Length: 435
Ligand SMILES: Cc1ncc(COP(=O)(O)O)c(C=O)c1O
Image (cartoon, rainbow, N blue to C red; front, side, top):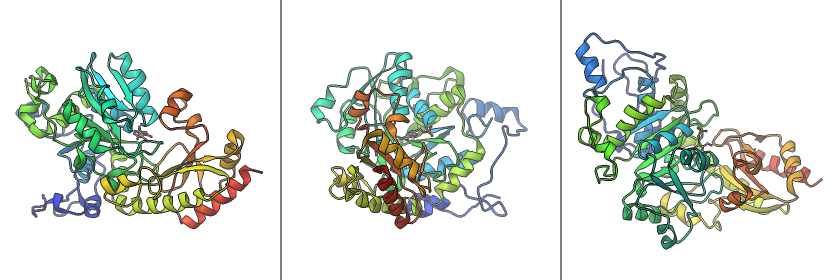
């Protein structure tokens, strides 16, 4: 039996949303979100199935395009971000690809920040170029006049990351959203590292928000997953995006903007791109990411506080060239925390330059006892990585420098252990690196 109590999830604080948004059990139903391990759904009425297949009725048809466990996670993250709807995908990378594919086609152009995750950079720079979609990468800190020059008549997307991975610049939302409005293009933001606990990009002008749920949403390094959130705040019927407006012959000539209004983007992404490309999240991974998201509001402050403590320690260490953590008061991005973030912190990701070159980096990594060398961020456990030889090795040294990734950079994803133990571990490993 359905839960009939009237609730307005949008009035809840973020912690209540983390725990309770998305899944609402009826009387006698499981208190905890079940894993609906099913590919298919039962119907008794041919007309009903016909309505589902022509988008005249919403509901699950086949798990490639929808499943109750996935739907609950989608509703939770949409509530956390303040969007009108969301769509899960098998990975963050798939979410980025679906979000972009839903908007552009061969002959179109994208303007993207160059300070983004290496996988997204390659997707735009190599894969999408091969499909006839061109991207101009811009320095997100360039003045507005400079950025304006990157736009072309066929530009269809402006793309950035709230907290760039791993240069850790905080996006100048005012500048980017102003340009997106001026050129009337949708503004897509990858909010993976910041999470909706720290920042809600839709409040600052974003139209579509993307997550690798693999990172802080999951938070325990157990499940890959991606999520796209529709802000419901872009006019897709402005003449630039005919596929949103024109009848879709495969769905009984449905016009997404006419039939779904504010949810046109996310409905079209599911109906066309998730269905036809097929990178669907598994119910088990949706369950795990949902479970992780239930403690997002407890973990992100702890990640941030630990990162600040470690950053302060590293700053005073004679064997460290530099430290980049926007939570440090003298960091050039620090003022943007007060401007755009809901909490005075900057997640667990920080970077620093270790003195002594590759040999020292190797010794440092090998000496860590609490932290470990792991290709990941957002885990409860502290991880370190050398981006130039791993996540960003597909970029040229020049591209890396332009994106703020020098050779001596070590990226740390600070976990939620005790800061004292982390500082002691880094202290001994840095000492060992100079031996
Ligand atoms: C900012 C950002 N976006 C997207 C991705 C891709 O996510 P996934 O690894 O879940 O495919 C990553 C992965 O590291 C990331 O850091």
